[in-house]
Image 1 (cartoon, protein in one colour):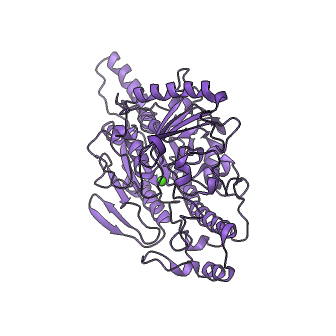
Image 2 (cartoon, helix red, strand yellow; image 1 turned 90 degrees about the vertical axis):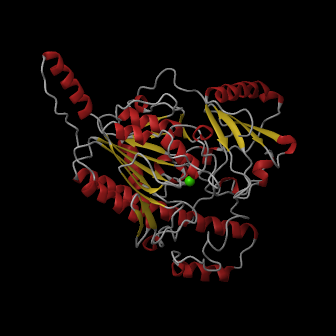
Amino acid sequence: MKLVPALAFTSMAMFCFGQTAKAAQASRPNIVWIFSDDHSYQTIDAYGGHLRGLNMTPNIDRLAAEGMRFDRCYVGNSICGPSRATLLTGKHSHQNGMLVNEGGVFDHNQPQFQKVLQANGYQTALIGKIHLDGAMQGFDYWDVLPGQGVYNNPRFITAAGKNENQGYVTHIITEKSLNWLKNQRDPAKPFMLMIHHKAAHRTWIPAAKDMARYEDIEIPEPPNLFDDFATRTTAPRTQDMSIDKTMSLDADLKVGTPKNDESFPAGQFDARKQEFQKKSLTGKDLVRWKYQQYMKDYLRCIWSMDEDIGKVMVTLKELGLEENTIVMYSSDQGFYMGEHGWFDKRFMYEESFRTPLIARWPGKIKAGSVNTDLVQNIDFAETFLDLASAPIPADMQGRSLVPLLKGKTPSDWRKSLYYHYYEFPKPHHVAPHEGVFDGQRKLIRFFGEGIPNGEEWEYYDLKDDPAEMNNRYGRPETAPDVLVMKKELSRLKTLYQVPNEKP
Ligand code: CA
C-alpha cells in the first residue's frame, strides 16, 4: 500500500515539493525477500547445471522467467550465521564481527539496514530462520526459529516469548508470512517482509507428503563425485564433509539408529531402512546409494519451499500487491550436490561460493533477463535501502543492485570479489582461507593450523576448468596471472579494511 503524506500547501513552491515527495513515496515498492538455507543453484531449473530437466523448482523458475536471474551472485563467507549477518549489515564478516557459526556472537546493536528502513517509513517483518542469537532489532514484527530450528513441530521465538507449532516448518513459516501479509501489517505503509526458510538445511527431512517424489528416478551424478584431489592442496584433501566419510547413516540418511529427537519422524523412513538393510552396500556402491538418498531428501525439502513460494505469489496477487512489490529469492550460500564427493559449503569453490539470486518487479525489471555482473551478498542491504529511497550508511561495503535490476550496470561496477572463510576445525575441518575472483580467474590462500608451512595457494582458470579440478598455482604459465590476482587480493583487503593476518 502506498504512503500518502498529508501536506498543507501554503505556496506554489510547497505545492511542487509536496507533489514530488508524494510521487517519490507513492512509488516506493514493497519488498518480499525470500531466503532459503543452503539452496544450491545446481538444483534450480532456471540455473541449469548437471541436474537440469528434473522439474525441481517451477515457482522459482517463474520468478526468473518474469524477472531477472543473476548468474554471478556470490557470498563473502559461505556459512549460515555469518551470511545472515552480512545480509543485515551490508558488511563483510570481519567488519560485522560474525565470523563463524559455532561461538559466533552477533552484536544486534550495530547498524543494520532494517533499522534504516523502519526509520524511513517502512514496516519491517522477519519470519523464519535467522540463526543469530538474541532479540532482533529494527523489525516491527519478528517470529524466528531458535538457532537452526527443527523440521517438524518447531518452536519459534518472538519479542513476546516462545510459541509452539504443529506441522512442517516450511509450511509454518509460509502460513505465518501469509497471515502477516493479510492480517497483521499496516496497509498505510510500504513493507519489507523477509521470509526465511530452514529448508534445505541438513538433515534434509522432507514433508511426509513429498516422500514419494523423485522415488523412481535416478538423480544424475556429478562427474567429480569420486574426486581424487590429484592437483589440490591440503585443505580440500583433509576436509570432513564428504558423502563417503562424513554423511551419517543415522541422522543424515535416516537408516541407522533412530534419532533421539521427538521432532524426527522415524516412521517416515521405514521403507528406506528395510531396503538398505537388504542391500549390504560397501565402497563406491554405498557412496552412490547415499548420494541418491541425500539428493532426493534435499530436493523434496526444496519442493515444499518452492510450492510455498507459489502460495506467496498467489496471496500477493489476491491482496492487490503484485504490481508494486519486488520479490527477491536467494539463499545464504550455495551447497555441494556431490561435486568433489561433498555435501556442505564453506569452500571458495563455485558450488558454495556462489548463491542463487532472482528478482521479479513488474514494469521495472525486464522479464526473462539475465545479469552476469559480479554481485555479492554485501550488496543486498544497500539494494533494499535504495529500493526504499532511504539513505545508505557510508560504512556499508556493498553497492545497490537497483541499476542492475533496471538493466543499467554502472561503468565502474566491481571487477573482482573478496572471500574469507574462518570456521575451523569444527565441524567440518575446512581450513581458513581467503581469496579473490574476477569472474574467470580464482586465487585462494589457505592458511593456519594444519596447513604445511602456514599457507598454501590454489589458482584456477574457470574458462577451461569450470569444475575447479586443476590447481595450476606454481606453474610457470600461470605466474603472470597469479601475480595480477595477488595484487588484486591485496587491493581488496585494503578496500574492505581486512586485518592483515588471522583476526
Ligand atoms: Ca546455510
